[in-house]
Length: 363
Ligand SMILES: Nc1ncnc2c1ncn2[C@@H]1O[C@H](COP(=O)(O)OP(=O)(O)O)[C@@H](O)[C@H]1O
Ligand SMILES: [Mg+2]
Image (cartoon, rainbow, N blue to C red; front, side, top):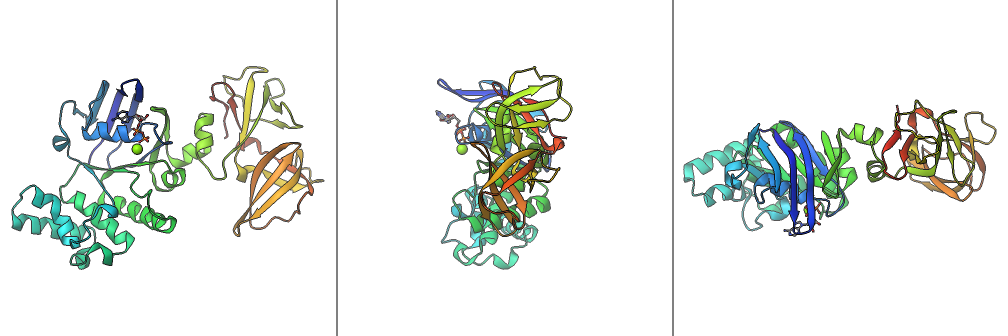
């Protein structure tokens, strides 16, 4: 159990800045995801925590204590390799015992610890089975167990299930979340999959080029992105963006190229009259209504319909611009039908076009 902190940590490899001035605090017992595209510095953050590399600047703390200069063994953090890393010819019990046998811990103690961990993880009945005879979720428990026998302060995982097929990934995700809750250990989980991060994390950090762009709960990240970068990275289908400018007098956003003029909520302090801006709204927040419905404010047409059962993704076009909307169930409109779109004020975001910074946020 541990609190893990990065204090102004930077790390370069030659000319490549892998991690830039990162400040992060992962709380005790937290399921914390580090999320971002390939090469944004995720693995480097884990290696810094583990003590496999030292920061050029800044400090890493475990439970408030600087671990600068301490080797991996003294930090007592466990990197968990998933089921793929279990030894196929060994039983679950032998797999669990492996890290202890390797450390030459005596047999009776190994047996005692394996039994205790198996009980914690509810895998006592599986101890004599080899990995091939275990389900995905069971193998995951054994893999965690192998780290747990060492009684680590926290678990770290680096894209542990990225290589698995979609169904198994979902099973593992749920299992992992349950496990972390039961075990009450801090878990830092690295992924480049936004859906995975959103579904599994208590809190997450979003990285861009080695920098932390935003930290928050999945709900905060999804509903209150502080930059266009974060807004674009999270959500499927992704957010819609329309370029134009904000008129602070009328408190409206007007598009550059299409007939799109909508009301905004209270303006933030950074809005500059006529400054290039970018309007953004999530597909599920666009309201689709009949052409004569006063709830709609922008004229559009149905361009394409993708029925997905529980909901429908509707491509709508305003002139040449296509937006993706999402409605529950089936759509009652037909292809090419003229419609109106509503953009609820409290769901509209506006970003500065050059810096990507949030100008007007959703309520
Ligand atoms: N040992 C290394 N030597 C040189 N460059 C490295 C090394 N490790 C990472 N990098 C570079 O640092 C950046 C961040 O890498 P990494 O932390 O592995 O990103 P991620 O895990 O998000 O894909 C990348 O540009 C990568 O090429
Ligand atoms: Mg990586």
